[in-house]
Amino acid sequence: MLAPPNCVAGHMLRRARPTLAGAYFFRCVAEAIDAIEEAVPDALTHLDIGVEDVPDVDQLWSSHMPLAACVAADENHVAQIVLFRRPIEFRAGDRDHVRQLVFVSLVEQVSSATGIPVSTLDPTNLRDE
Image 1 (cartoon, rainbow, N blue to C red):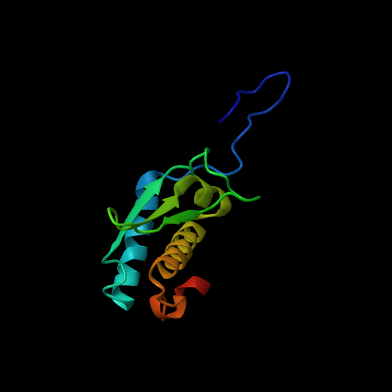
Image 2 (tube, rainbow, N blue to C red):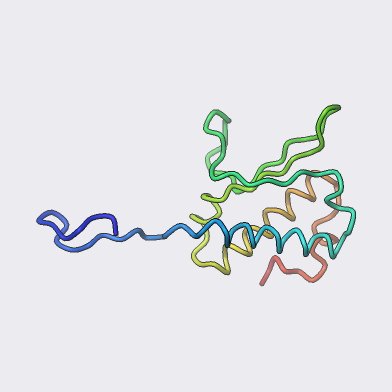
């Protein structure tokens, strides 16, 4: 509930899309990692995968909010993939869509970071469920 009944609103106001518990989101990430490792066991060997609530506001993004980002490897660090929890939850309509967006975002970022084709990382085509 955002506001109790009052003379302005007249009735209770509710959020259009409630945020999901972080535990469910992390479970979705773990399931996506497991599915990728099952398809290509060495795909994630030289990658760090993390979750942040929102993207860094200091970054210049195009006209849309990213769901994930990849930072290329350098001589001191392995490549890093970051999934942004709030944008994914906001874009999704329900829990199943959150699970699918997490998987799709992770597969696309792993493909970008490693050069492994998306079809190899997702041979059972879970992206289209």
